[in-house]
Image (cartoon, rainbow, N blue to C red; front, side, top):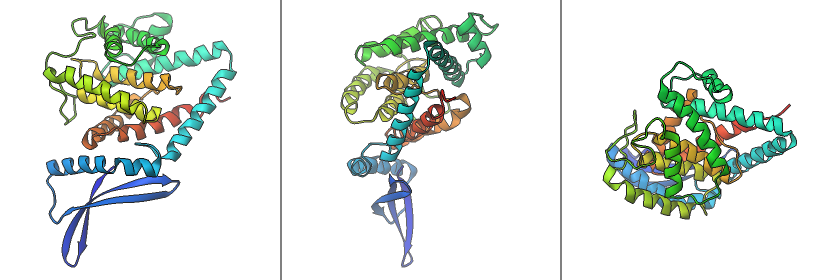
Length: 310
């Protein structure tokens, strides 16, 4: 991430923007840009950093080979992914089914819990596996069941990633609990709770979503699957196109990107909520998906390096 550097020389202060690029194990290269002799305001610094990030984008790609992740991070993730699928394919269908169901249980619990669901992990498991509904708010129960159905939908979906697909995902997730909003773009302005960044005003959502899909068509050819998953997640949250359910939809679409590109799906834990939100804030501040991509590649390794090992 780019940051402000202050240096003193000959009794004077000079200010620079800098970013340290990881090029190999334990080796980094710093890129700098001089910006003057006065401390920029917070608002000006945000603009300067955004412009600086754009200016050095291609230099970073040349150094690392990827937009957000180092070659080493990508190679490690690819190795973990390959090893996991070898272990997965070596076990019988019963074990595979158990592993898949355990992921669904964990993902459904965590993704809804992040947004305030009252169901415990045990209650989610009983609901999804045994169809035993807990004595909890009906919407929490309905959204847990719907999340399971949406996960199955994205695992088997073979169509294009576009507006119809995104609206379908949201409609499936919230048709039971929020029928007035399900599968429709927002009609009133909203914001990310606990966040400082502004989302797209309701009247500009259609335009921003068109730009989102256009940019996706370009980036899908350039980004590594983990980077693309991070970008899709961050960009959708930034636009916040739905009246409610944007975070849950973004995490589903993140996993669609991973699954469609042959990577295991990621379960972001509720206990990691603050670090996850902080990464999204950094993405918005720097106007790119780097912070979330770094977070995801670490979560991916943690989740799959020992999965299905005896």
